[in-house]
Length: 363
Image 1 (tube, rainbow, N blue to C red):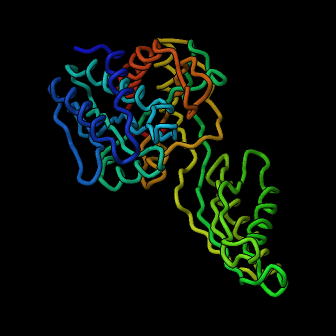
Image 2 (cartoon, helix red, strand yellow):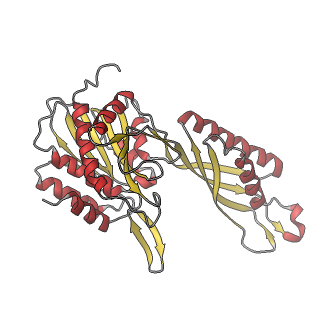
Image 3 (cartoon, helix red, strand yellow):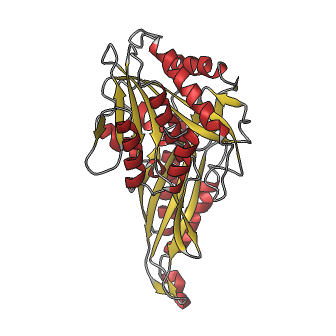
């Protein structure tokens, strides 16, 4: 049987973009089938899950993500695992292999999810019914050395909320020599950008990250398209910043005579960490390495869509110290591979802790 390092090296080599994780999924499925697992697959994407049947139908679920990120090089587009999804899938796979012969009280589900980087993979899995009877959900994420040392793990990551906004502003074209007779769409977009700068306080921000307008140097542009990155520490704050953004666009319309349309393209809600799940995580980590505090990060994770539903499971995402440098999504990201075995130990212990809890009881 391959070691976890061999598994990681194979997944690292296979790196594939969101919604195209065919080889990655096939490899993981093959490993699980060889170990005797039955699998549930879905039409239209490469996500799947494996299960260990328990004494009850209530489900404890571990989730891993599979997709990689694109990078432009002199030779064209390449795909690299710079967010650790190859590590996460390796850890969840080997956790499954580690306990495959056990007879737990709860049914245990191992979910391998596509397209985390689009913030849409979890939503698709929810539509496919993977939360059916799930009472406990856990994931993990390798963390930069600036957050955790290689000897630590955190019993929770408090990710913030994020929304990617696609916007369009419509004005009125005019000759640049008679600019006052038109409505400059580029100027209106710039006014909105300056108004949004005032929102970037207390962990919340609204940043214009793309802007395209104009066709010729001597024509006032009548159209501009742009994208905004909205971030907030919690879901309530995100609702407020969304409202502020809309009011700012309304103000610019009044000031300039332009017209704005704003559309939420991709979004991920903020973390909702269940206290009982976090307690299980803390006990699991304590048996393996040093327990750090819950991490606060402005980054986002589509894992938290799973808790943004009616009757959501008790959920926690563990932060895995791994000596990761120079940072997540950096094209040269690297980490201490000893973290892989540590991750398996923690997730195995976490399932044992969660299996002792009656999740139907009130906390």
